[in-house]
Amino acid sequence: NAGVTQTPKFRVLKTGQSMTLLCAQDMNHEYMYWYRQDPGMGLRLIHYSVGEGTTAKGEVPDGYNVSRLKKQNFLLGLESAAPSQTSVYFCASNKNGRTDTQYFGPGTRLTVL
Amino acid sequence: GQNIDQPTEMTATEGAIVQINCTYQTSGFNGLFWYQQHAGEAPTFLSYNVLDGLEEKGRFSSFLSRSKGYSYLLLKELQMKDSASYLCAAASGGSYIPTFGRGTSLIVHP
Image (cartoon, rainbow over all chains, first blue to last red; front, side):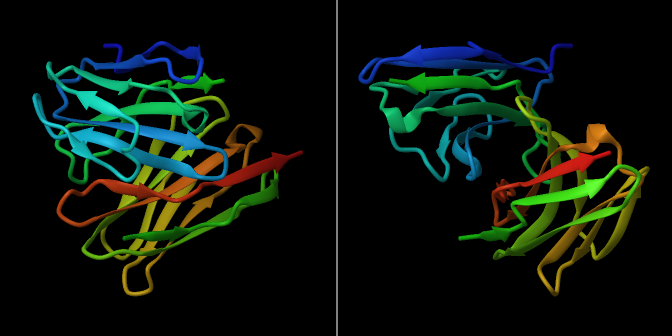
């Protein structure tokens, strides 16, 4: 039982490049989330999903797209990376999205030059 | 929207007790979470309060007052490994998705 895993762990991009971050969970959780964490800003929700095939916008969705084609995977895409997207990205999941605790992945540290 | 406030940084001595406060303003409150995050690592769950009062879990306790929009995390018998960031998060509205505060960096020194 690996919990929540994220790929890659580190990445450096040039402005304008694209990339996809992969989140996978093996706990059969319905809800999955993407957050970004910047110094002094706490965790901010980018997008989330309440089940396979669904996605919804969070607090800071601009510049990102997501897909949830399989229940266990939640992908975060950056179509044209900008330096403002330099951050640590965390994926999380929980069973029913209500009062259930969130389980976080180890994070992806992204630098956009 | 939601507004969550907690101190930016606190310091304490090994073996002491520290209280980290969190105030929140939300509509349709559905509970208050505390997470611990060590530097370079993912947040891990500490506690969840939805009713008023104190919940105790070993060295850690969490308190909630819904009428005052206030919570605190109490850490007893501090250890060096308790040096970390402590995140307060309030769940509200129909989505139940928590909104996180900016975190309190706790430094425990000998």
